[in-house]
Image 1 (tube, rainbow, N blue to C red):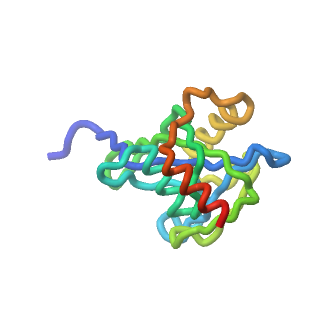
Image 2: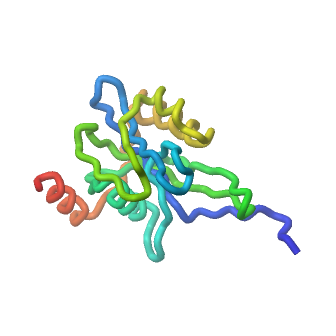
Length: 169
């Protein structure tokens, strides 16, 4: 017998990397090479056992882009969508970090390309309405207005030391 409800699952994170110092604000997107073949997406991935959401965000960014972030912000928003095959509503907390588009990116095997896009171009490329809603929200709360300092996540000193090592090597 099937349950008479739709479970909500929150076991993954979504991370948007933004460059606000470019002539026009930019967002980093990567083209999927396997799952969702050809779709342009932000960094996203599962939370591992004994890992917090923000720790998963940092790890996923490092795995998918090679970047060790020195700052991380909660977007105070969740990306959510229905997964028909599993009959679940998937909720992903959204995180934001600011990175220069000049920073070298090393994509992993999940992707076959990456590029920095204007918000307008990213809106056109996104396959899913939820991604577009999140990007509209990020533009309003992190670009048009300055993000609330209360949304900044205090990273451990070790994280900042690792980031310094990556940037100087």
